[in-house]
Image (tube, rainbow, N blue to C red; front, side):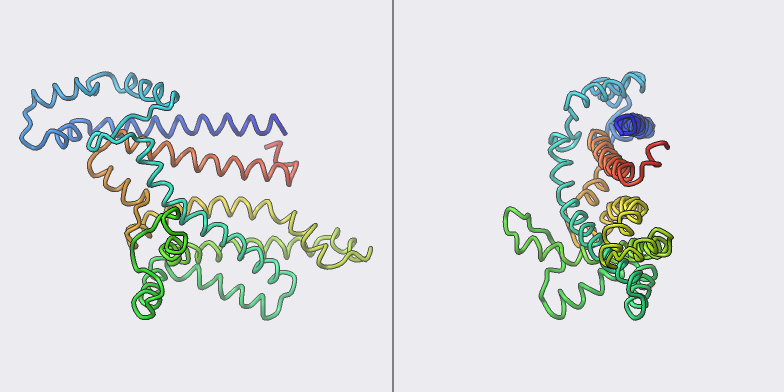
Length: 313
């Protein structure tokens, strides 16, 4: 198991370095435009060249990248070109808002999907038909359309929830919950559709296997067979789908945040990209890659624990 984890860690490290390197090289093609946006449109070529030299942008790109990497490894992510705010602080503040929405949506998605998928596979009948209809609804209806419908009903007509804005949890837990309720529901729908369908299919496959019939002949209760045996064997693929849903929710949150005026990484990264704020963009890229890689690593470890055959891959 230790060698399996070390292999996954090595792969994750290489992936992180490659993504950061590619991002930096792509940004380097627009250094002239970035410097002009800092100095203003009236800047002369000589002024631009002097500013590039001051910022170290006149050095070879590879030298600049390894200089950034050297400081980043030491915890120095640099400062914003336009606000002079430390990158680590800025990214963490906005990332916290996004995670407060995505993590809540992910946990509810996992809980609802497990219950729905297990009941649909083990009980069948009306519950199974309901699960399939719910999955079809989640596949067909876009999250953005769901979000708009929820705003019209719960924010405009009923006035139960705020239509836009965000309240930090430390300021008021109740208002924080109200501010993220509609975005969370909008993010959940597609995830529940995918994950519940995956769990349902995997559970049906497990419940048809020989070992389940053997357990039944030994007098093991259906509840124990479903929850202790079949669900554990079906959990590996479900964890993989859950990790993909988490990444999809991060992407969906970028749109949802703009719709609901949430100060998360969506609007923040969009503004940074428009300005060409390289330190912020690199910090956002690094945080995002590390988070995604970390989630995938956790899923790989769980899969390796659940399925010893996965450790050999």
